[in-house]
Length: 138
Image (cartoon, rainbow, N blue to C red; front, side, top):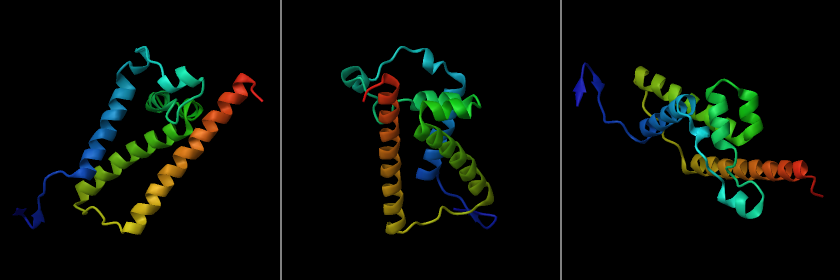
């Protein structure tokens, strides 16, 4: 469908991710998610933080403009929250400018996958080191 020289298309995966990012900000900012009692099953069983421990606290802290609190809760959580919300803004600007979503090569997708897995592993290692240091374990 074309109108005034511009093609109109239905929202796709990039817009869905942007919508989820916006929703995550709204929930983290306005819903009392930390008031709900919850316990990490992995932590309850092992006494150690799981790979995503602290992410909810990081999202909530960053949504309330507490970058230090977000970083303290989970460095990866702070980066994911900030990145997701920045992505949503950039995708909105891309849509407003009528710029198509860029096509990425398989190598670029692989590099991103390696980066994500590496960041998760480094974050979990940091969380484990911090937890053992706090407990005073050798």
